[in-house]
Length: 346
Image (cartoon, rainbow, N blue to C red; front, side, top):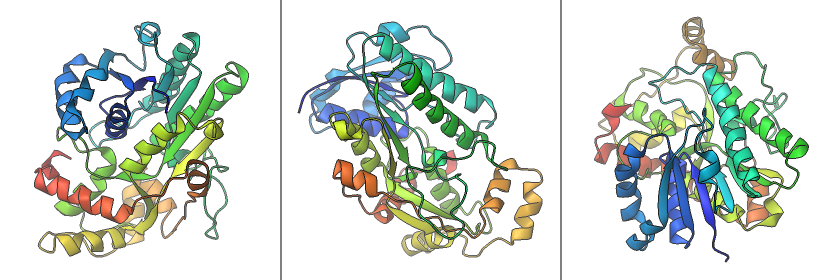
């Protein structure tokens, strides 16, 4: 396996930390971008203990970059031969999800890729999302979503995060086709990512679902089903893609198991019977009323009762990946949140 110098954007992110850990374990050199170098001590402290060889941490260097500013990008790309672009604004329950998500996601993706391309980097692996796929038209009869599907960006009740991931990935492929034909790009589109994070400073956004259920935050559940995947599988797909030419020019769904909120809550109650985990569905008319005031709830109501399957066939065929049991990743995530007293940090 050839060794690479990889720039990973958004190095403090949930998925990015696992990617960096795998890259270092595999012998690569990594430059990680962060918005503030003050995060370096915590990041090294989180990744170091997870490495097979703690000395591998010496092959990690951090640089300060901003998705919304040009400063530093050209210099950061010097000596790099692979761009791993994971950085994008993510809803965490504490910041307003507005149209700035869209402009930052698009601008940041193009800024990172253009700087890499100008520096001679041709191999790029970019983190997109199932959000860029599962808002496609059709599928009313339970047809599986796959990589040929694209979310319609002006679909009613589409939240800014979903729109940001869709338009950013669209912009990436348009740029590849029209301005950077020599760029060899692979997009990874994860579903809801589960698994213990590296570090305990904050709860990753996708684990907020578990944190709310374990805390009894909501008295009832939406009639909604979600596809889940282990964070280790998502990270491994990013790393595998680097040296797999058959993945170039393609996008890949990363998903293993579909579960409803009722099923998810029942799973958690098995392990935590003493917690006030909700066990009933919310009335749809109540959710509609809430949706009059909260845009994110309108999207839930629009998908009420749907059970949309997601295909992982392309990833299994092209990458040879065998997906881990997402149910076990969910259980491990819940244990991590409880054991580290993180339920009050959501």
